[in-house]
Amino acid sequence: MKTNFLAHKKIFLPVLLVLVFANGCKKEFLDRKPLGQLTFDTFFQNEEQAIQATNAVYNQYRSFDCAALALLACSDIISDDADKGSVPNDQPPIQEIDDFVAGPSNSFFSAIWRGHYRAIARANLAIQNIPNVDMDASLRDRLVGECRFLRAHSYMLLVQWFGALPLITEPLNEDEYYAQQRQPVESVYAQIEADLLAAITALPEKNGYASKDLGRATKGAAKGLLAKLYMLKKDYANAERYCMEIIQSNQYSLVPNYANIFTQAYENGQESLFEIQAAAYPAAVAGPGASPYNMVQGVRGTPNLGWGFNRPSDNLVAAYENTLDPRRKATIINEGDVLPDGTVVQDNPQILYARYNKKAWVPSHSGLQDNGPGNIRILRYADILLLAAEALNENNKQAEALTYLNQVRKRARDSSPVPLPGLLPNVTITDQAQLRERIYRERRVELAMEQLRWFDLLRWGRAASVMQAVGKTNFVAGKNELLPIPQTEIDLTGQLIAQNPNY
Picture 1 (spheres, rainbow, N blue to C red):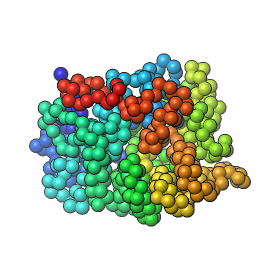
Picture 2 (picture 1 turned 90 degrees about the vertical axis):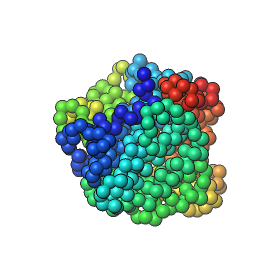
Picture 3 (picture 1 turned 180 degrees about the vertical axis):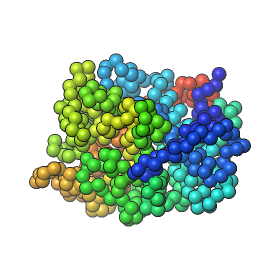
Picture 4 (picture 1 turned 90 degrees about the horizontal axis):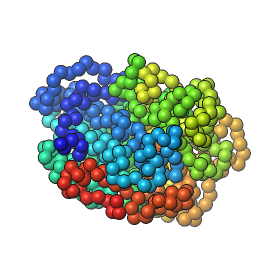
């Protein structure tokens, strides 16, 4: 029975019963009673339902498929930033990914494919139907813009993971789902670009939202994702343009203390361009607004905060140019560390050399640890500053590139609890090749454990050399830059979807 590929037609109406979106710093949820038996004939009839359909797209990014082990395995763990973590016999498929021996049947490849195509399916339904709703025109256009941004976000991840993709931009009949073929990467890029340009036109700036709506997609977020697309395409002129538009918008600034960025108090704060919203459900069980993101990376043992996956690697620890770089302590939890809530991480004899991702840390909360309340940072201002520096350097504007690189470094050294002369001095190199290396290094330590490293290595063309250098000798150039297409999807389409090379 065909039940997996894009998994779409049957998922929308049940989702309407759990349409939840965390709005603003107060995490105001749409706590709604069941809506009854909804059908396509009775939905998309009013403004409220248009909002709910949009919220359903956001909601997907809190799912296990999109926010838990599959995400971490295929971003941090696959890279040189992290190892599998947890206890040795827990989740062998993740170790296979870490070791580059995973094949098309690995369940975590299926999860990220399924999770993001479900988000795309929800976005497609909303984009097609919301324009026909009799409602405030500016709100209608904004909701469609949000959905186009979210669709672009999913396609951006999928195309970097898998390469050529089935390109679905409208709801399909059931049989049509199984007749899809992969479209060239360039076609996927073109769709992402079109969605983001439309979103930029439709969306407000961050300060254009009421406080209850903070966390929704903004003009700045769409420009940031578009800049990343242009960096991927090596269109450095356009990447520079959109980075500079964000910088000059005066909507964003660096949080003075680096460690504060990842606390709940600074969610949707001055440095945030886009975050996946989450909040613990105030009950003894996990609620629909929660995310598994915190739990799967949480300290395993005492205190008991989670499963202990995504261990910061030895190579990452050594990557900081100074052991007193405040970013290292703000990124990595070691045994014996005192956590922000005052608890001490105890030795766990089941885990050898345990470390944990501090950027995913949240204190104990109601509803067990799978009721994760922490937002997932997707795009922040420091990322944009470093993209601007990179693009400017490639455009032979080294002096300007240094301005933005050194803003990031200054914030890092100013985050030290005590002044340390000589800590992280400004970079003054103007040779393009040498400055490129400094920017690459700064991106790694500034954005470590934020699920970005693997994608940087891919677009720089350095995945093979870096993986070999850290002992991942099973990496095969020309193969492992892409993940295998899940075998279930190939089978369900009767081989219409072809496998990536060498799998």
